[in-house]
Length: 591
Image (cartoon, rainbow, N blue to C red; front, top):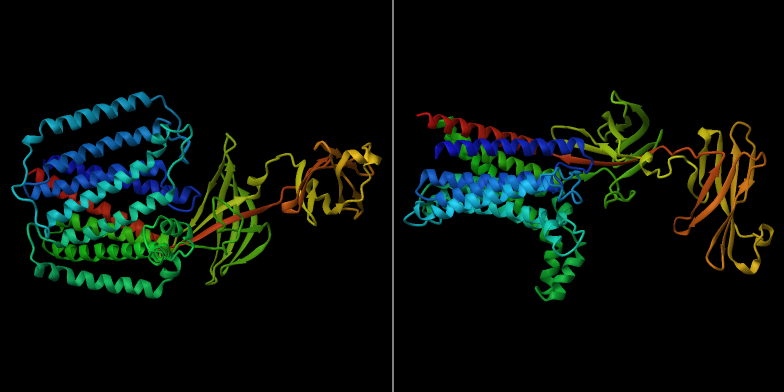
């Protein structure tokens, strides 16, 4: 049993290292704004770890008492089964349409299904066959005991893994009812995992503080007093010195509140309160329990380390867990966009700003200048932004953005890491918005001026001209529903000479479009008026003899992520805890 325990500890440590490396890679490589996006690949990596850690806790109970054998075996089988199932999700191509990772079918679909079935039948079959032979405790564990806390924590970990894998597998189940099912929204994962994380964090603090077997109420009060006092003080400090309330109260949840009221589930005042403050209360509880997990295990760590440092693996891992939870909380709740929230809509939000080449833009205390591009050693364009921080510090961000061989745009964010906060910058250059690569098609707003042929000419859409006689262009007046010209001014930059063109756009009574281009006096340049966009106060033109110069600007999404370093520190501490536990158990197995 001890060898299996050592193997499980090492396996969970390696899985945690893989999850951390994947999250950090996503953070510094992908441009979705963070280290976790509830993507199927991310979910598939965390679920086996959650079940593996749940199995580890059952093994701890098994080693210390006569209970936990059945739970440890069952959770171990499920953990390994989900390793294979996760491989199936990410390598069979079955989720290729709902993941940001473009995985295709590698021809392993049937093999992976057979492997899952074989392991499930073998594992659960042997468990059922030997079920009666597995020892069971003569009496259930006392409510106020470490066994009870550990079992409850293992159950919450398993429930968290189950929720995540069910959400990830939703498109598979959906194929039973529709051809192109979609994945569940991110809100599904947040709604379910935050309450479960609160329970896990609270029990992570209690589990190490409680004794094996039974504790009296007086014992409980004594071991909880100092951690709880520190937790209350720390939570109160965060509420006082940070914009926690402003960041977490969501008065815009009218839709959810109205639904609850209409359903008659709760009275209107209560439903309105929870619609506005529900998320804030949940996050407050998460903050409280994260501090409690940290302080509770720090007390245990100091006590154990004074006696024998080798025994501190469990408490050190839980200290790391508390730090990681605080890092997740700080970098998510206080994630501050460097913008006013009224930029161009990108990926469902407007937390961005646009800056043209050579322009300096003041935004949220920063001054940002787009200085241009350069080519890196791989031959890819690098977009350069010079920043002046509110403190006066100056620095440059360098975003690599390019098209791969398949025509897909690849964006690498730039992360300026700091001890107390990171600045995360993603760039969306104007080149990404150009659908017509030859520059012949041009969308232009009324009053706007565009550069042609590398700056040799300028083109300005001055205004519409409704004084159009269709008969002069071969159309009977009674057959025309709309005839409008665009007054276009073309200027030769070198000579300063300007001429006006009047391309005409006609819609006949039978709703057909007719185009009458206009050509410059020298016959070199022709402009056709091919469409109107009234909502945008713009028109579409097609040019001959000239091409429009691409506008050079960058839409920037930038976020300040405070104390995200605590997240990475917490995971590293957890890894040290796993390593110390593996060393201790391996040493025990040799004696």
